[in-house]
Image 1 (cartoon, one colour):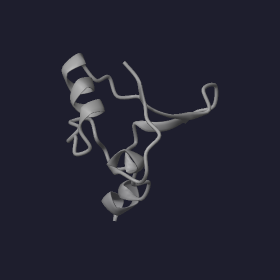
Image 2 (cartoon, rainbow, N blue to C red):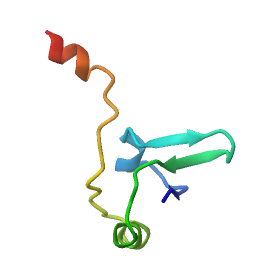
Image 3 (cartoon, one colour):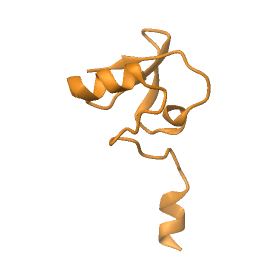
Length: 65
């Protein structure tokens, strides 16, 4: 299930799963949220996603040092 949201800066904006869909023209969440998680996500501004991963492209480099 994919969720699209137009929001200001939030934790989703720094998540690896939050990507721009060129076909649709907006950002979508590629995490496979179940129905309960989707309801929580859409109804709360402080949703704590269990699929959140920081989009930190330098984490691999730091790990190799």
